[in-house]
Image 1 (tube, rainbow, N blue to C red):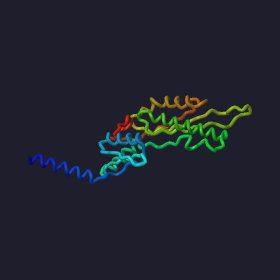
Image 2 (cartoon, rainbow, N blue to C red; image 1 turned 180 degrees about the horizontal axis):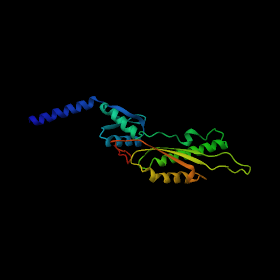
Image 3 (tube, helix red, strand yellow; image 1 turned 90 degrees about the vertical axis):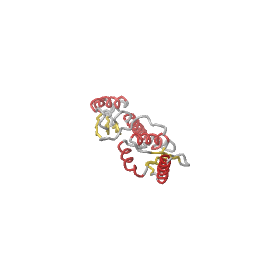
Image 4 (cartoon, one colour; image 1 turned 60 degrees about the horizontal axis):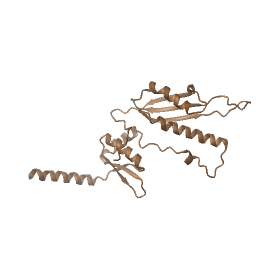
Amino acid sequence: MRYFSSVVVVLAVFFLSACSDPGEDIISGTDQYEANEVLFCLRRHGIDSWKSKADDGSISVFVSKDDYLKAFQVLKINNLPRENRNTLMTIFPDEGMFKSPTFERIRMRYGLETEMANSLELINGVREARVHIVIPAEKDRRNQVVSKPSASVIISHDETLDVDAVKKGIQAFVANASEGMPEENVSVSFFMQTIGDLIDCKGQATDG
């Protein structure tokens, strides 16, 4: 009976201490998918976390005050939450705008850069990707472009990425997705981001 009473007391203390720590929101105003991705990552690192849904439908993820700094570091290393890249329609809406040839080139180039970066970030070991495309506008007397388009790709990665193994594939991917761009016109720069003993959280998020 004495053992049972001790267990009850311990559980009561634990419950009261948990209730006294409402936690700190590590991210707020996000959607279900991103919240689950953050929960998945934090829990893989042994950080207790939970989510709460606001009246407007947005979701916040909370951690205890004691775990906040570690949680912040874990999410930063894993580039979470993901940067919200604007779509073409949010930056260049169709309605009420005069669509000049220059405007259309900008739309197409930005859309291509964004989609390429999103695709490259699916590669295991890639933390973040940026693609910058240069499309020459200068033409000769026969209305032909003097030089071919080129691209510069910046890859931030962890130590698990085999740079030599993926570089050629990245060049081919960018060139094939860009009309008239030869592979030799695609430069790829790699920058390693050390994770140390932290876990790479890429993978399928849970419904947590």
